[in-house]
Image (cartoon, rainbow, N blue to C red; front, top):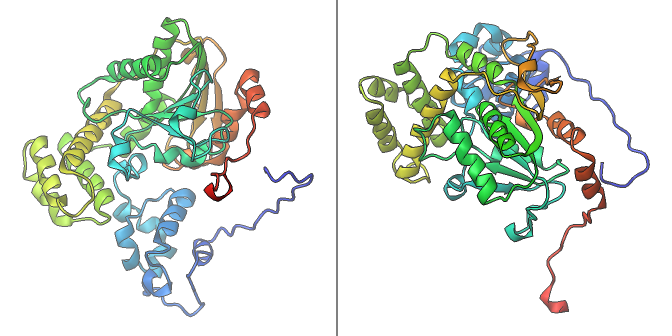
Length: 402
């Protein structure tokens, strides 16, 4: 799109509806007409190089989440009858909410991260960001991962910052989290007269509270709810955790995070965790099981487990009624279990705009429509700055020519 060519031709690719035909298009996969239903997926070419692509295909097209460590042992017959294996392999709904852990422990514990956008390249230094500009401030979900928003931010026409929720403040309620993040905006990021807030998943109710606080200070702006409204997100989480007791939630959550950190599951750990009565004892057991096997410190792993558990409970139990805002509210709704549209006039005195996305909640931040929709609703002052900006990449100077 930035090539400068006068004419750009886009050709639509034919996407087969048959699952096996789609799987066959993955790199390295060969499925012949003579393949036996008892053949494992490893035998047709599914290995570590493409098993992630298979899991993504099943999630996006069939809304089924498969554990990666189970993929090599699945058979072609099971793949043909994917709905029959759904109940056996579909993980608790936590996989759609916590799908990755930030790789860099130091970055994960900072208050905020500047993101590369169309206005700011990855090699720009922090002192090159002008706080007088209007930023998009992003509040992440339960996993507190800024990495989920890299693709979306790359196509934005304004600078962006991800505000980390923090790990040591896991005892805070929703309003306390919002107040703390607003203080970061006011004192450290020096927000001026207007705000652009985007909340994803757990971040949705947080930004609604933040917007109310900022409006009480006399600021105006726009709020983007990525995934749906707070009631959408809460209902979706409750559906996925239906019938799960607090004990089961703790064990499933700890096992899930352990699997993400380690890259494999440990079935024996489940029985050990269920035998421990206190959550803090369960956390210690997981930390001990991961010691020396992951690059993260024990303190970080323990803080991560406590924080994710606290946020999950908070999202499950939080109220979903908020102060009616003067700000414009735009809902970018994911493909949730409840497909019925919901009226949400009480969120803003302005007309609430709702866009239905095709992506599931986990993949919503990577839906390319999100960037274009955010850009669509930017004010003329922000867009004018963008089009007047020199967007040439700054190349490092070769000292030989100085």
